[in-house]
Amino acid sequence: MPPSSQQPFPLILASASPSRRRLLEQARIPCQVQVSGFDEDSLPKTMEPGQLVTALAQGKAKAVGERLPQPGPLVLGCDSVLVFQGAIQGKPTSPEEAIHRWRALAGKTGALYTGHCLLDSGLKRTCHGAVVTRIWFATVDEATIKYYVATGEPLGCAGAFALEGRGGLLIEAIEGCVSNVMGLSLPWLRRHLAAWGFSPHIHWGINHKKAP
Image (cartoon, rainbow, N blue to C red; front, top):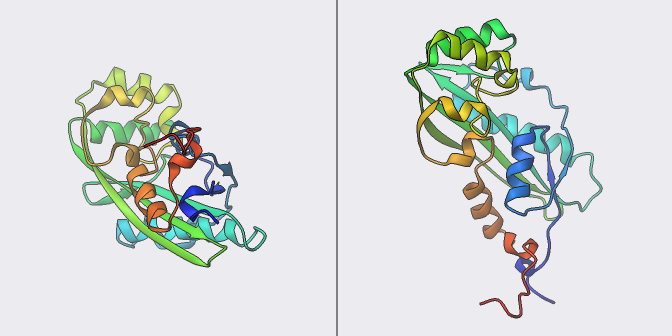
């Protein structure tokens, strides 16, 4: 019997985020998406940011895992918030709120927290944690802010920007994991898959008998 690291592993992404799914696809990690339906308002926003996003990721992964046949596939839950001047910011609820946020963000720094939870329903094990990336926002004028918000992109993103989209033009610098800013730290996922004996390269279409 080959070791588990040489077996393809099914993965369910417990998130509706297109950017998270795209990150997995670009890394050639096949996944299926199941939206959790977890009530994000059920957790107090007074929690420390890392604890909050981790608890949200756990809630999403658990909600999807409970719907799957047992033993089932791996489930990955994620959630992100931006912390700016000590306040937790999720997705803006209106264009006006997005404009107001960007007026404050321009030329300043924030921290993007993404919580992760990887659940293995087959062996009843989980791992979880938060990754933090520091972001320097560009100094932009009022017209640029309004044009950016008018695209609609900021309304679907924690922190009111998408690094992989138009928002990437408005970011001056990043310190830490880049993919974390897009909602999923690929290094975090790689480390924890490896700890469980799973190797992403099994999905890369390489002949393992000929590979080094």
